[in-house]
Image (cartoon, rainbow, N blue to C red; front, side, top):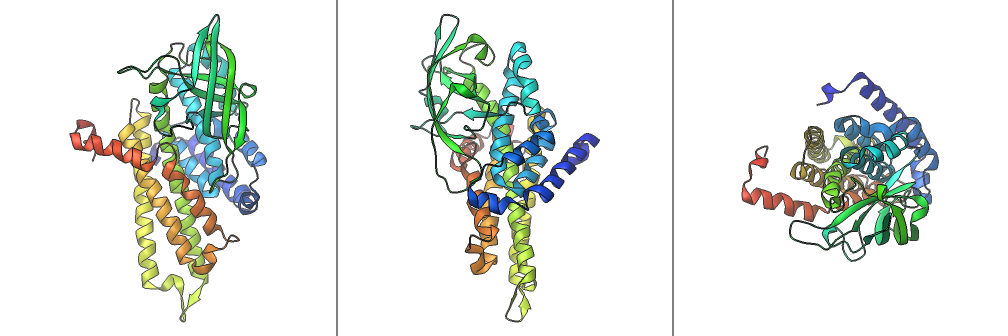
Length: 378
């Protein structure tokens, strides 16, 4: 799949790799420990054209996110939520909405986030209670959302709300685009990892927006639009998992090459080499499945099983690799002044991102049990 990349794609990816090696990795440990928002790094992502990466193939986008996560997983939610918004407008927005939003989104002049989850439910978006009701020349929105990442630094938000009662075959949900001054951050939520980017609880109260903020211009289409965008999001999370897995694996290799125990280099011990082989194999398989899912999604249509499978496999690999890397580093791996603890904390995010592994496995399992033809690739 990588052989199909254009010369422009290769230059873009080379620029991202240099950015990670020269500008992110030298500062990541200090910034993460401080819980500092990466203002300068996000600015550089804009300059490098990262926010326009959604205009490239999903394979290129996947490889770019992998590199980003290799440097610092806190940068991933900034890019992922934004790209999901861009994807939705490109695929489902009206011509007017594309004219209004896409240029600024693709340049990074406007950075977007996603407002989906609510306090009473996580992955079950069909139970959304936030509402929008028609009123004169627009809609009035009331919403209460939580776990909304990058919502205190984003310039816009794609918000999922209920516009009609749920009925069989019709979740009654719609997506709206909001601007930064139209929602309130209630609080920033403490969390285990990805310390450099905020995750918040937000509210929207009696907000009047014009009709042109409704994505696609037709109410009731929001759930299908979100499901389409989340498939791109799962590719992003799978790519990020591969990236953080790579960082953990090679950090462990570097560490074992410098340490001696019982008169021999740790890296020369057969048991250690066997462990590294298992991790390398799982990482390679996760990357291959992720790129394959990205290529499938690029072809168009729904790819929920493929993208879910890639996300589950990559997430499990990342956590296993990060945990084993900490073990191989011995007692120092548990210390906060080494990166192994940070990598493990960050890696756990991918177990829940864009649908928990349990929920996605239930989807994959139900399709497998039915023996549907869409699983012919297995």
